[in-house]
Length: 303
Image (cartoon, rainbow, N blue to C red; front, side, top):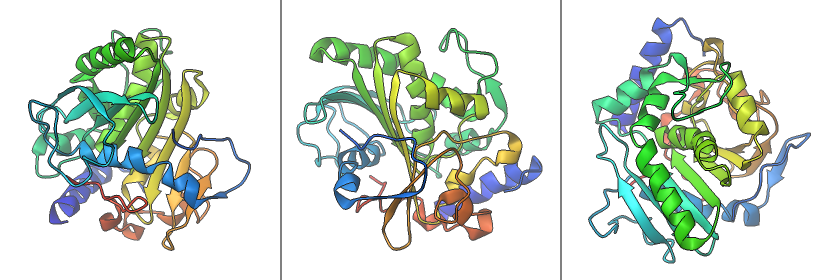
């Protein structure tokens, strides 16, 4: 927990310097906040296990030694990579129960300096035209997240294409926690640009803001991204970073876990209701970093 507090202090310092203030259930464009039933919440549990497993170092047989790694026993691994420092751990495989290729990327390791710098590098930049050909120049993303995405983009794309060919599918589930959620949200745009037939389902946990309004609008509107859900736990402050005054916006699809454990679906982008993250955690002082790792319906993000 001390390391997580260090990460928050580092991120807060950057924001202060910049003068900033503060298959799964489908995302629907709801007109009002609605309760997510327990049975609907349960559909996200396999994805939470994948997001948690991404924190573990895979060995040469793509086996993981961690509490959440055996929770999806039908998973068929394809490839993995990363070193946990310069490149986040990642893995790709196929889940026959979800009938989907699965991509999971490791979240922030606060004990490693490179991920700390990645989370703190908050300039908005245009995405690499080689990785994201044809995107409008108005679409921008967090430089640190974009750089982290680029370091494994080619390898993950090759593994996804291999899985598509092997299992005769075009469906891909992208998931991660924290920094891993940010990287896989970028993959939600990147993979369909590179593989036009791909159909993306995205589920992120403790997602920080990744891009500007044009980026959020693109994620919400693009036909290849069939479902976007980002799940925030209680008073986790990470989803309010980087600040909106810096030009960042979340796409729609928030689910906010209440202190009671109830899950609420919040419509729109950055819903300001007190039942949703932006209204509940108005600034960093209102946050509780211990909520960042979960639990998410009983699943904690750790190896």
